[in-house]
Amino acid sequence: MLYYQPFPIAMDKGEGSTLWDIDGHEFVNLCGEYTAGLFGHSETRIHTAVHQAMMRGLNFAAVGRAEYELARLICARFPSMELIRFTNSGTEANLMALTAARVHTGRDMILAFRGGYHGGVLLFTPEGPSPVTVPFPFLSANYNDTDSAAAVIAHNQDRLAAVIVEPMLGSGGCIPAESSFLQMLREATREVGALLIFDEVVTSRMSDGGLQKRLGITPDLTTLGKYMAGGMSFGAFGGRADVLSLFDGRLPHAGTFNNNVLSMAAGRVALGEIFTKEVAEELYVRGERLRTALNDRLMKLGVSMHFSGLGSVATAHYRPPLIRCAYTPTTREDGLRELFFLDMLKAGFYMARRGMIALSLPVLQSDLDRFIDAVEEFARTRQGLLGSGSARAR
Ligand code: PLP
Image (cartoon, rainbow, N blue to C red):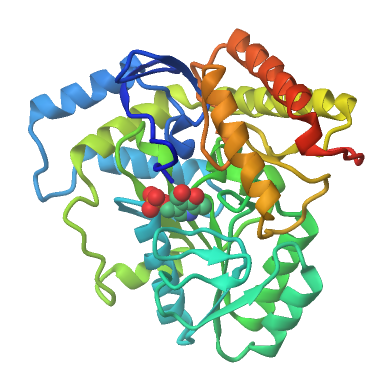
């Protein structure tokens, strides 16, 4: 992720949405720490909360007020969250949610989608589970393929413990789920007695209560992570009280730093005071406008490149829309992805190397306007390499 040829840029400091590397070059940060950097680098209220928490002393091996308040905030906002437990990462949150589902149902199998990413040890390539993925008995299906996923669920109904799904494939290319696909997963899991888990580690920013609230589809369990503790390490899993109550004695949930005071204090302020319902909606709309503007420019040039995504998160693809599931890029697409990343660095924009952008709250509209121009410039100068495309992007 972070290493590339001829050498990776080492960052020195950040302020708002600006980054400086160790040689003093300045960049607009459109990577947004892979969606964890929603508040930018220097939000005063988060800095103050962290400093105040430090002044009261680091970690007490006990529950605390900020933890209680953050839990209440999240449960009030996310439709599926009756109870919640904290972890240090999205990976741990997903491991715990999957384990809870297996114990609750007394079954072993899990359906995950090709191209899904649920953590460092929960990676599903376009072909299926990666060798780094933990050895749970996973079943695979193609994202947005309603019929084949329904068939896998029906065929394994006696052994299926859970279906885990990102409501938008994040690292798999910012490919939104079709509402009918998620709706089928909701109904089919209910019918066979399996649990539906929404991994909202990335998509939780799509409203004050995640993409589940925007879509009106409520899973049994939800996992969270990234920006929610204002940039401190964070993860959480929660949902139906009858499932979460497993942890009231029957199942252990250990982790030294699960409720560490810095994450809890920063999270309480980040969600309680900064990322309000209105701010979440504004950011969503801002991202939608940006993606539309980028795609309009690319379509006018007639090149085979477009951005897919939802709200404030988008990814560049070098093939015509509409992309409905994860794919293995061709050598040509791999080359274009690298070229786009390097050209954008040269133009002063730091983005995720895989072509993903994630807006942070402090990013300036003037910087986004300059980014649209820079993308157009890329498409013009690299037109011969991009080739032509036609269909309209969402
Ligand atoms: N789930 C999704 C959808 C993610 O994008 C990520 C991280 O990128 C994770 C889970 C894992 O979170 P973490 O890196 O905090 O372990």
